[in-house]
Image 1 (cartoon, rainbow, N blue to C red):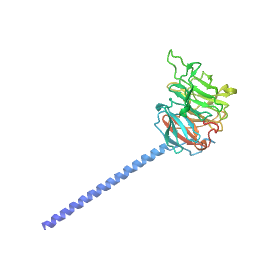
Image 2: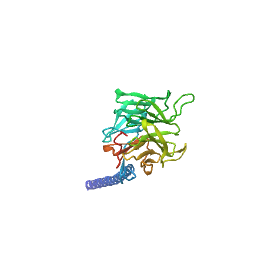
Image 3: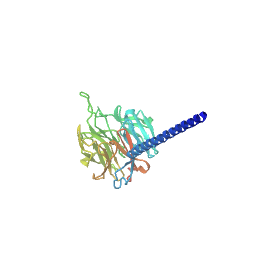
Image 4: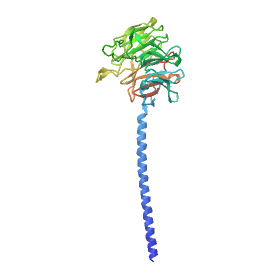
Length: 342
């Protein structure tokens, strides 16, 4: 009888233990489902936050177009330009490299030891021409066996720190040199816009633009555009024979112009054009788009302020935008000019 009582007590203990384990398992299962649900919700929220819809602009960007984040945490992002195969290059000046984005979005080094390259362009010989900042100048950096300095002075005075360039079909190179300001007692060239003629002569175009930054040509090479980071307008010049400029004017009024801690500024930076002559401007407002008469068409907002942009990809119908360490791509209805890399 005592043995049977002990067996019954032992059975009750086993059942109680099993019930306790079952209850614990149910509780943990419920907690796990709640935790997994929370993780899923956070993941979905993150994905939603990263799924950015571009502003629709007639003839430029279709409705419901998604902006793709190619990558972030790059060490300086500038100078995008298309390669002949549709892939795109951009610069990482902080690590002294020109970087390539393949058609599948993968990233690799294209030119190492780039002399601090910033703005990029291709000449008629297929050579990669760059604004160099270490030391300051304009030079060919690719192919390696053709690397050379094209210009580093104006009237025997060293350049400040050139920023961006565009190469005309004639072979002329237009570039901006916004600074930095020279130290006292150190002779430096003016903050200005310059042209390097096909013969290699350096000509001053304008020295009264507060901070010339991005620079671009119309598809027919007849109009030169200059972004003034501190100004309210993109400035335009007509280009005549031998690349001489005239008819300076305020071309496009920028929505990004606002008061900042350092005074009024638009943040206007890089420029691009499409085959219809529309102008794309990276500003503090985003990517501002104008028709070839300077009429505003719309603004594409981005998570980070853009610094420069270029058409590339298949049929040059993808707009690549770089800025603040990030690279984005936007499928477009418009396509970049076919007669130049940018």
